[in-house]
Image 1 (cartoon, rainbow, N blue to C red):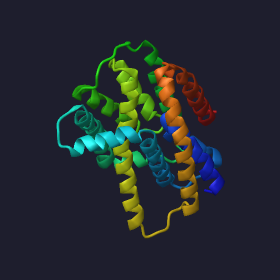
Image 2 (cartoon, helix red, strand yellow; image 1 turned 120 degrees about the vertical axis):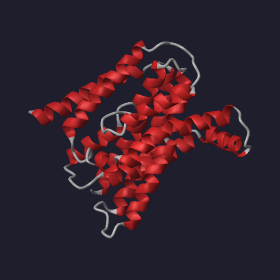
Image 3 (cartoon, rainbow, N blue to C red; image 1 turned 90 degrees about the vertical axis):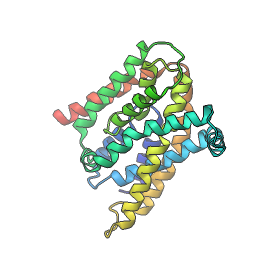
Image 4 (cartoon, helix red, strand yellow; image 1 turned 45 degrees about the horizontal axis):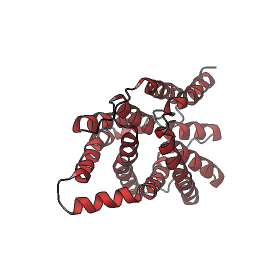
Length: 262
Protein backbone atom coordinates (compact mmCIF):
# COMPACT_ATOMS: atom_id res chain seq x y z
CA UNK A 1 0.00 0.00 0.00
CA UNK A 2 1.49 3.32 -1.09
CA UNK A 3 1.01 6.52 0.89
CA UNK A 4 -1.30 7.87 -1.83
CA UNK A 5 -3.52 4.80 -1.57
CA UNK A 6 -3.46 5.14 2.23
CA UNK A 7 -4.41 8.81 1.92
CA UNK A 8 -7.41 8.04 -0.30
CA UNK A 9 -8.55 5.13 1.87
CA UNK A 10 -8.10 7.23 5.01
CA UNK A 11 -10.23 10.02 3.57
CA UNK A 12 -12.79 7.43 2.52
CA UNK A 13 -12.86 5.93 6.01
CA UNK A 14 -13.26 9.26 7.79
CA UNK A 15 -16.05 10.42 5.49
CA UNK A 16 -17.98 7.16 5.55
CA UNK A 17 -17.58 6.32 9.25
CA UNK A 18 -20.26 8.79 10.29
CA UNK A 19 -22.26 8.93 7.08
CA UNK A 20 -24.62 5.92 6.94
CA UNK A 21 -22.89 4.20 4.02
CA UNK A 22 -20.56 1.70 5.77
CA UNK A 23 -16.92 2.67 6.19
CA UNK A 24 -15.75 -0.96 6.34
CA UNK A 25 -17.57 -1.73 3.11
CA UNK A 26 -16.03 1.25 1.35
CA UNK A 27 -12.56 0.30 2.62
CA UNK A 28 -13.03 -3.17 1.17
CA UNK A 29 -14.21 -1.75 -2.16
CA UNK A 30 -11.37 0.78 -2.20
CA UNK A 31 -8.81 -1.91 -1.47
CA UNK A 32 -10.18 -4.06 -4.28
CA UNK A 33 -10.11 -1.07 -6.65
CA UNK A 34 -6.42 -0.50 -5.88
CA UNK A 35 -5.70 -4.23 -6.16
CA UNK A 36 -4.46 -4.49 -2.57
CA UNK A 37 -4.25 -8.15 -1.71
CA UNK A 38 -2.51 -8.01 1.66
CA UNK A 39 -4.39 -8.22 4.95
CA UNK A 40 -6.05 -4.88 5.53
CA UNK A 41 -7.64 -5.45 8.95
CA UNK A 42 -4.72 -3.68 10.67
CA UNK A 43 -5.14 -0.61 8.47
CA UNK A 44 -8.89 -0.70 9.07
CA UNK A 45 -8.41 -0.72 12.86
CA UNK A 46 -5.86 2.11 12.75
CA UNK A 47 -8.03 4.44 10.70
CA UNK A 48 -11.02 3.58 12.87
CA UNK A 49 -8.89 4.65 15.84
CA UNK A 50 -8.27 7.97 14.09
CA UNK A 51 -11.99 8.53 13.68
CA UNK A 52 -12.32 7.72 17.38
CA UNK A 53 -10.21 10.81 18.04
CA UNK A 54 -12.42 12.91 15.77
CA UNK A 55 -15.46 11.95 17.88
CA UNK A 56 -13.57 13.05 20.98
CA UNK A 57 -13.02 16.45 19.41
CA UNK A 58 -16.59 16.98 18.17
CA UNK A 59 -18.20 15.79 21.40
CA UNK A 60 -15.47 17.04 23.75
CA UNK A 61 -17.86 19.04 25.92
CA UNK A 62 -20.29 16.14 26.29
CA UNK A 63 -17.47 13.74 27.12
CA UNK A 64 -15.91 16.07 29.69
CA UNK A 65 -19.28 16.58 31.38
CA UNK A 66 -19.91 12.83 31.46
CA UNK A 67 -16.48 12.14 32.97
CA UNK A 68 -16.95 14.82 35.64
CA UNK A 69 -20.37 13.42 36.53
CA UNK A 70 -19.04 9.87 36.83
CA UNK A 71 -16.19 10.99 39.09
CA UNK A 72 -18.74 12.52 41.46
CA UNK A 73 -20.07 9.00 42.12
CA UNK A 74 -23.67 10.18 42.10
CA UNK A 75 -26.60 8.66 40.24
CA UNK A 76 -27.92 11.34 37.88
CA UNK A 77 -28.85 11.76 34.21
CA UNK A 78 -25.20 11.79 33.11
CA UNK A 79 -24.17 8.64 35.00
CA UNK A 80 -27.32 6.91 33.76
CA UNK A 81 -26.34 7.87 30.20
CA UNK A 82 -22.84 6.44 30.70
CA UNK A 83 -24.32 3.18 32.02
CA UNK A 84 -26.48 2.97 28.89
CA UNK A 85 -23.41 3.51 26.69
CA UNK A 86 -21.58 0.69 28.49
CA UNK A 87 -24.58 -1.62 28.18
CA UNK A 88 -24.81 -0.92 24.44
CA UNK A 89 -21.17 -1.97 24.00
CA UNK A 90 -21.62 -5.40 25.62
CA UNK A 91 -23.06 -7.25 22.58
CA UNK A 92 -20.39 -6.09 20.12
CA UNK A 93 -17.67 -6.73 22.70
CA UNK A 94 -18.77 -10.33 23.25
CA UNK A 95 -19.08 -11.02 19.53
CA UNK A 96 -15.71 -9.39 18.83
CA UNK A 97 -13.91 -11.50 21.42
CA UNK A 98 -15.67 -14.82 20.83
CA UNK A 99 -15.74 -14.70 17.03
CA UNK A 100 -12.61 -12.70 16.21
CA UNK A 101 -11.27 -15.16 13.62
CA UNK A 102 -14.65 -15.54 11.94
CA UNK A 103 -14.94 -11.76 11.66
CA UNK A 104 -11.46 -11.43 10.19
CA UNK A 105 -12.35 -13.99 7.51
CA UNK A 106 -15.04 -11.64 6.21
CA UNK A 107 -12.40 -9.06 5.28
CA UNK A 108 -10.12 -9.34 2.26
CA UNK A 109 -11.82 -8.23 -0.97
CA UNK A 110 -15.04 -10.18 -0.39
CA UNK A 111 -16.82 -7.78 -2.74
CA UNK A 112 -19.94 -9.86 -3.39
CA UNK A 113 -20.67 -10.09 0.33
CA UNK A 114 -20.01 -6.36 0.78
CA UNK A 115 -22.44 -5.57 -2.04
CA UNK A 116 -25.16 -7.68 -0.45
CA UNK A 117 -24.67 -6.05 2.95
CA UNK A 118 -24.80 -2.58 1.37
CA UNK A 119 -28.26 -3.49 0.09
CA UNK A 120 -29.23 -4.41 3.65
CA UNK A 121 -27.96 -1.00 4.79
CA UNK A 122 -29.99 0.62 2.02
CA UNK A 123 -33.14 -1.09 3.27
CA UNK A 124 -32.48 -0.02 6.87
CA UNK A 125 -32.08 3.59 5.79
CA UNK A 126 -35.13 3.54 3.53
CA UNK A 127 -37.34 2.30 6.36
CA UNK A 128 -36.40 5.30 8.53
CA UNK A 129 -38.78 7.30 6.36
CA UNK A 130 -41.60 5.35 8.02
CA UNK A 131 -40.17 5.45 11.55
CA UNK A 132 -42.52 6.84 14.24
CA UNK A 133 -42.04 10.54 14.95
CA UNK A 134 -41.82 10.17 18.72
CA UNK A 135 -39.50 11.77 21.26
CA UNK A 136 -38.81 8.90 23.64
CA UNK A 137 -35.79 8.70 25.92
CA UNK A 138 -33.21 5.91 25.74
CA UNK A 139 -33.92 3.11 28.23
CA UNK A 140 -32.03 -0.02 29.27
CA UNK A 141 -34.05 -2.06 26.78
CA UNK A 142 -33.56 0.34 23.87
CA UNK A 143 -29.83 0.72 24.64
CA UNK A 144 -29.43 -3.06 24.45
CA UNK A 145 -31.38 -3.24 21.19
CA UNK A 146 -29.28 -0.45 19.66
CA UNK A 147 -26.18 -2.30 20.88
CA UNK A 148 -27.35 -5.43 19.06
CA UNK A 149 -27.79 -3.33 15.92
CA UNK A 150 -24.20 -2.14 16.30
CA UNK A 151 -23.10 -5.77 16.39
CA UNK A 152 -24.47 -6.25 12.87
CA UNK A 153 -22.16 -3.45 11.70
CA UNK A 154 -19.19 -5.76 12.28
CA UNK A 155 -20.09 -7.12 8.86
CA UNK A 156 -18.40 -5.15 6.05
CA UNK A 157 -21.12 -3.32 4.18
CA UNK A 158 -23.43 -2.75 7.16
CA UNK A 159 -23.22 0.89 8.24
CA UNK A 160 -22.68 1.29 11.99
CA UNK A 161 -24.21 4.75 12.20
CA UNK A 162 -26.93 3.72 9.79
CA UNK A 163 -27.83 0.61 11.79
CA UNK A 164 -27.73 2.26 15.22
CA UNK A 165 -29.46 5.54 14.35
CA UNK A 166 -32.08 3.74 12.26
CA UNK A 167 -32.82 1.32 15.08
CA UNK A 168 -33.13 4.19 17.56
CA UNK A 169 -35.55 5.97 15.24
CA UNK A 170 -37.60 2.77 14.79
CA UNK A 171 -37.89 2.68 18.59
CA UNK A 172 -39.32 6.19 18.57
CA UNK A 173 -36.30 7.87 20.14
CA UNK A 174 -35.78 11.59 19.53
CA UNK A 175 -33.52 12.25 16.49
CA UNK A 176 -30.91 14.34 18.32
CA UNK A 177 -30.74 11.89 21.22
CA UNK A 178 -30.43 8.98 18.79
CA UNK A 179 -27.54 10.63 16.92
CA UNK A 180 -25.68 11.68 20.06
CA UNK A 181 -26.03 8.20 21.55
CA UNK A 182 -24.94 6.53 18.29
CA UNK A 183 -21.77 8.60 17.98
CA UNK A 184 -20.79 8.30 21.64
CA UNK A 185 -21.51 4.58 21.92
CA UNK A 186 -18.90 3.84 19.25
CA UNK A 187 -16.11 5.14 21.49
CA UNK A 188 -16.01 2.04 23.69
CA UNK A 189 -15.77 -0.69 20.98
CA UNK A 190 -13.40 1.33 18.77
CA UNK A 191 -11.10 2.00 21.72
CA UNK A 192 -11.20 -1.67 22.73
CA UNK A 193 -10.58 -2.96 19.20
CA UNK A 194 -7.73 -0.50 18.63
CA UNK A 195 -6.12 -1.41 21.94
CA UNK A 196 -6.28 -5.15 21.20
CA UNK A 197 -4.88 -4.60 17.71
CA UNK A 198 -1.96 -2.61 19.11
CA UNK A 199 -1.23 -5.48 21.51
CA UNK A 200 -1.26 -7.95 18.61
CA UNK A 201 1.08 -5.74 16.59
CA UNK A 202 3.45 -5.48 19.57
CA UNK A 203 3.57 -9.27 19.89
CA UNK A 204 4.05 -9.87 16.16
CA UNK A 205 7.39 -11.38 15.20
CA UNK A 206 7.10 -10.32 11.57
CA UNK A 207 6.80 -6.70 10.37
CA UNK A 208 3.40 -5.46 9.23
CA UNK A 209 2.64 -5.87 5.54
CA UNK A 210 1.67 -2.19 5.45
CA UNK A 211 4.39 0.44 5.93
CA UNK A 212 4.24 2.66 9.00
CA UNK A 213 4.20 5.77 6.81
CA UNK A 214 1.07 4.51 5.05
CA UNK A 215 -0.63 3.77 8.38
CA UNK A 216 0.18 7.28 9.66
CA UNK A 217 -0.99 8.92 6.42
CA UNK A 218 -4.25 6.99 6.50
CA UNK A 219 -4.82 7.85 10.16
CA UNK A 220 -4.28 11.60 9.64
CA UNK A 221 -6.58 11.60 6.61
CA UNK A 222 -9.27 9.68 8.49
CA UNK A 223 -9.08 12.08 11.44
CA UNK A 224 -9.47 15.19 9.29
CA UNK A 225 -12.30 13.87 7.13
CA UNK A 226 -13.94 12.36 10.22
CA UNK A 227 -14.20 15.79 11.84
CA UNK A 228 -16.04 17.09 8.79
CA UNK A 229 -18.32 14.07 8.35
CA UNK A 230 -19.29 13.88 12.03
CA UNK A 231 -20.39 17.52 12.13
CA UNK A 232 -22.21 17.20 8.81
CA UNK A 233 -24.02 14.03 9.88
CA UNK A 234 -25.45 15.78 12.95
CA UNK A 235 -27.12 18.32 10.65
CA UNK A 236 -28.39 15.64 8.26
CA UNK A 237 -30.18 13.63 10.95
CA UNK A 238 -31.75 16.74 12.46
CA UNK A 239 -33.26 17.52 9.06
CA UNK A 240 -34.55 13.98 8.61
CA UNK A 241 -32.57 13.32 5.41
CA UNK A 242 -31.24 9.90 6.43
CA UNK A 243 -33.37 7.91 3.97
CA UNK A 244 -31.75 9.61 0.96
CA UNK A 245 -28.54 7.69 1.61
CA UNK A 246 -30.43 4.48 0.82
CA UNK A 247 -30.24 5.43 -2.87
CA UNK A 248 -26.46 5.77 -2.75
CA UNK A 249 -25.86 2.53 -0.84
CA UNK A 250 -28.23 0.67 -3.17
CA UNK A 251 -26.35 1.92 -6.25
CA UNK A 252 -22.94 1.02 -4.79
CA UNK A 253 -24.19 -2.35 -3.56
CA UNK A 254 -25.76 -3.33 -6.88
CA UNK A 255 -22.66 -2.16 -8.76
CA UNK A 256 -20.39 -4.27 -6.55
CA UNK A 257 -22.58 -7.34 -7.03
CA UNK A 258 -22.77 -6.90 -10.81
CA UNK A 259 -19.00 -6.47 -11.08
CA UNK A 260 -18.45 -9.76 -9.29
CA UNK A 261 -21.22 -11.70 -11.06
CA UNK A 262 -20.45 -10.44 -14.56
